[in-house]
Image (cartoon, rainbow, N blue to C red; front, side):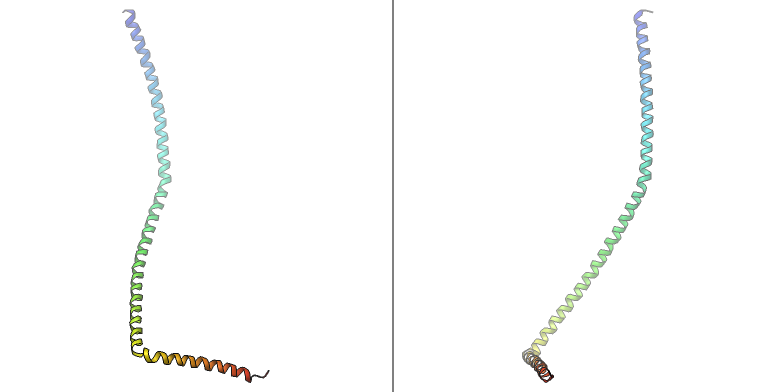
Amino acid sequence: MNAIGVASLVVLAVVSVLWTVLLVAVLLELRRASWRLQEFIRTLELDLRPVIQEAREGIRTAAKAAQGVADGTARLRGALAAVEEAGENLRATTGVIRAVFGSRLIPVAGVLAGVRAGVKTLWKRYGRRREPS
């Protein structure tokens, strides 16, 4: 064999050994990285499972609360409609009473209220005068 052939074989052998050493080092680092990744995933699974369950419970609670608000809003709308209807009835009744009795009864009621207030005032003054000092 000639010198160039031997030198080429030696270079190829050295390169193969270097590649083998580098590949072993890379494989060991990949193995460590995959072990760390597995530990990280395991930790996430253990820590996130309760958080996910709490989040699900929170979402269920929020959905129940939203449903309760929707039901309450429907009841409130019904109650407000009933109050509005009662107000309209009261307004109509007041209108009828004013139409029938308003022109006669209101002035008479005003005069009676004035007379009553005047009588109360006079009675109080009369009562003060009669008290012995």
